[in-house]
Image 1 (tube, rainbow, N blue to C red):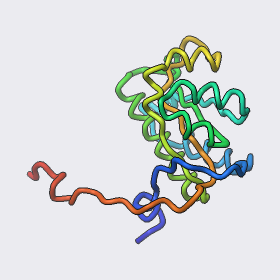
Image 2 (cartoon, rainbow, N blue to C red):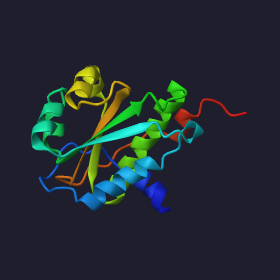
Image 3 (spheres, rainbow, N blue to C red):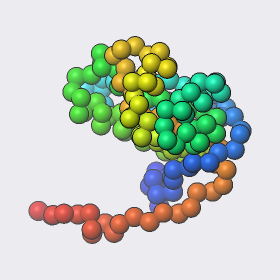
Length: 168
């Protein structure tokens, strides 16, 4: 199996991290992977806020019921849709999903653990205010990043045959 397919199958959400910091070069590689995601008209509508400051990490973590996961991650990446760059909301949101998946896979390939925090969107406006982003920025998710406390467990998926509805 090639490296990409293997990474897709092996990547897991990690919810417990060691305290070890993520090196700047590794962070840049993860962000760069997000930058290379496909987007409609190549508009690249994403913006990132990198959060390493402990006080800010705790404040962001307080905006979700999964706060313990975010509190212990040494790095948080908040991903935003910049509506000024948007040309089609559905396509742009899909592109940001691809951007986030690229970052999750890149982090995995570099030995890091991640989890995509979506529940925090229930308090999206509070997070946007806390991070003092422009009004045109809409929070799409936060990724917790760090060195995994332990190797994530394997996971099962439904059989492919269950997912294929029809063939023509």
